[in-house]
Image (cartoon, rainbow, N blue to C red; front, side, top):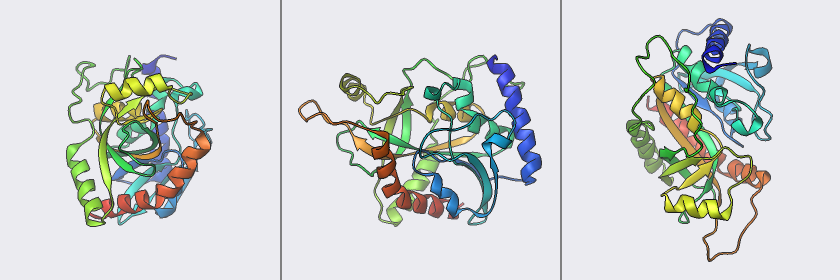
Length: 278
């Protein structure tokens, strides 16, 4: 199926969800990365629906990810939470990996919050650090809006100088400072996986000025920004890759989940406190 037809299907998915949730206004979408699906416990008066019950939704089958969409309130703001996301390494096409962004845009959601677990390329990072994404590098050649045209798009080109919204980042940093929590900023690199990065790739990424690396988020961020949403990206550092003079270490998915679970309480608390300021 071509990307244009896929996006028409996503509109049908959004129409289905609009009727299911029957809610006039959603303030923000949050996409929960590996190990962060328990954030749904923070949502009050939740209404949930399984991905398998939504037309045209693929299934998220990655350990540590949820399989449902939840609508509810946090501090009187209506939040739509995707408890699991869709990855290119699962065999899902790049247009569909940005499905949460398409759905959010068609439901007129103004703010898009993406969270993920990421490898620390910056040797100054520590496991468990929270890092706001200030920019990204996408060497994959994959793009979620390639071949898609919507009625209000005059051309396929769009500016990305403020893709990860600076105002939202500054608001979040202010909340973190007031809570005496350390939150850094960094450049995220999207690589499609499913293998973790080789030592040579990490060395290359450091040379390019990359701070974080992972297998998600960038397709969603690109689509959300093109569709007019304000994007905030937040990574949990689950491992820090060694430098050339340090011994090599093996990375595994269970380690990623363990470290994300440890940092999830801080992450959840800061997001809730930030939402309270809206």
